[in-house]
Every structure is written in structure tokens, then in C-alpha cells.
Image (cartoon, rainbow, N blue to C red; front, side, top):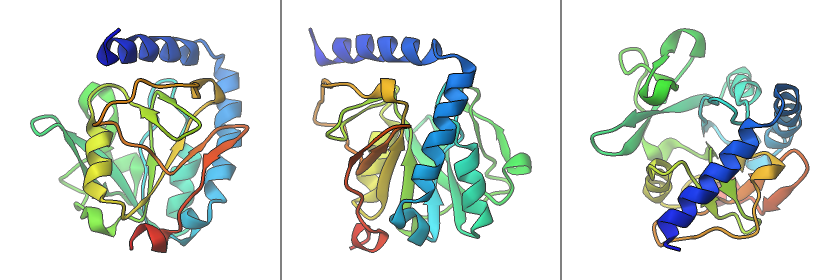
Amino acid sequence: MAPSTEKSELRKRILAARDALAPAARHDFSARIAPRLLAIPSYRAARCVAAYVGFGTEFDTGAFVADVLTRDKKLVLPRVERTTRSLRLYAVRDPETELVPGVWGIREPSPDTCPEVPLAAVEFVLIPGVAFTARRERLGYGGGYYDRLILALEGRAVLVAAAFGLQIVPELPVTKTDQKVDLVVTEEAEYGRERSAVAGRS
């Protein structure tokens, strides 16, 4: 089976399993993951944190985003640029008023009210994904947006993914364009070793 076909089949299977979780279970898993993320030393040390707005049956990023703002860190959220198939990052102070419906209905920063942030300023990135391995390999949604973002960051930021336990798989059909993260956090475990924010910028 070709890697692209294998990825597509695995993506369908994992998304179906995630969608099948009861809302109460997703809420419980998210509530257990969030404190693990907030306790990561490189997160606590970071001054500029990139996150994302959870969509559909993804991990609920609400508590994480709220903590970033409460700690007076700079919150950065992505905006999809379909023409270049890339993500541009913008500082957000008030998600309630500064986010607008974007591609696929996902809320993203309005460039009219949110200033763009250079990648070099970002120290910690919360990364979404469909499936992961214990080796921190990642399967995304198929557009390659985050793979390109990770490459563009050039190792300057700590990359952490939040996922439910059912999203951890033994193997992924990895290709040369697929990028790893530093740490994967689930409701029950952590995979990998985080780098410090300082080391991530060296």
C-alpha cells in the first residue's frame, strides 16, 4: 500500500474513533491533559506561546489558551494562507473578539486587529494532529501546514502535541516531509523528552 493511501486509511480510522468518544469522555480527557501541559517547564518559561483553537472532537485547548493569557504571556494563533499552503502567526489578546471564521470554519486571528508575529519570537508551540507514535512521529490532517511550520521554526521552539490516548499508534507511514514533535501529552502518559525553551532557541 502506498504511504499516501496508508495515511488516508489510518486518518479515517483514528478520526472515526475520536468522533465516537462520548462528549463527557472528551471533556474529561481534555481536563486531564491541560494540567500536564501547564506543568511543562518550557511552557512556564516561555514568553511567547503559539497554540491553536480546538475544532470538532479535538483536544479542547480552551483552558490552555486561558492560562497563556492569565500568565501574561504573548498568545499566538495561526491563520491559514491557502495560496502558499502555510500558516502565519498572529498575536491575540482577546479570543472572543479577535477571532473570525476561517478555512474549514476554524476560528483564526483577524489580520485587521491582530499583529503578525515573527517565527523567531515563538518559544513554545502546541501542535494538533490526528495520530502520533511513542517516538513522537506525527500524522496530521493531510495539508502539510504544520509540517511546513515546524520546518520554518528551525528548531527554535519546543514542540508539544496534546492528544487522546486512542490517537497513539504503534507505527505511522512516515515520509521525508513528515516532522516530529518533542513531546506528546495524553490524559495518561507523556511520550518524549521536552527541551528547555532556551535550548530550543540555541
